[in-house]
Length: 188
Image 1: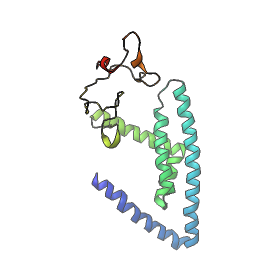
Image 2: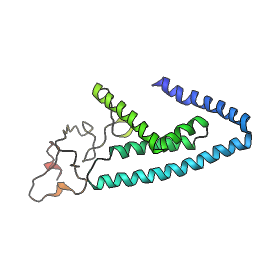
Image 3: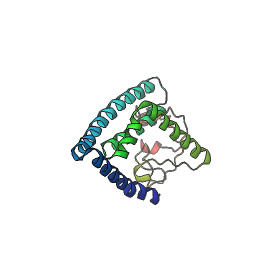
Image 4: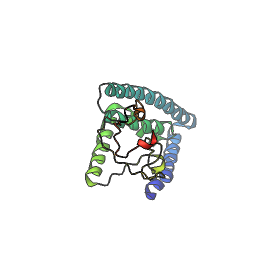
């Protein structure tokens, strides 16, 4: 991991600087500055346009009750591509434009999905929720196995979201349809 970070933060700017010097020698200083500004503006416009289209597709899939996996992956690719395009440089601009164009974005998504699938099949995929890899807070505000000491196990389907649309803790008959196995009758 450290090697990748070194590559990203040391080698990439060095290569970018070298490429910008070569472009400067080829077309001159002010045209080089113009190209940097133009790619930043064009990248911002394209990222916004593609992001809005992806957002619409995501909402359409959600309204039909489908999972928007493709749209979520496209959104991440567009976000990274937009960040690359507003970063001055030739190499980052090239990769940024590749991420914003729908045909090349589809290829990037396909490669990433294959990688995720192979990691999941190997059992080496790690997904962390919460801040800085910590456990996300549960429905009662505490983290699972956290300070409250509750050990809650999820029992339900992916469609059930506890306490998302209504507060189920205020039932009058004392019954609870809470998908967690922990008894919370003492919290009422």
